[in-house]
Amino acid sequence: MSHIIIEVDEQIAKAYSQTDKQQQKNIGIVISSWLKKIVNTSTMNSYKQMLDSMSDEATKNGLTPEKLKHLLKDND
Image (cartoon, rainbow, N blue to C red; front, side, top):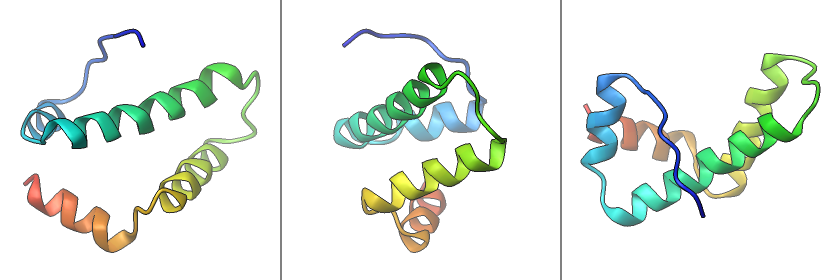
């Protein structure tokens, strides 16, 4: 794998730095998959379709609204 640098807001950077290495790896996998879809898709019908696709994949990987709420609450 290669590394890239992406600018994010301060809250995201802080939350990410406070997660353990496994969570950081999981986040990297999700972001890599998302970027791959964007780069490999010549035309995206709409922003909503992209968000729906990301939501479906997150759900398929076990992310539920409750887990997301818990993760976001833990990072506040």
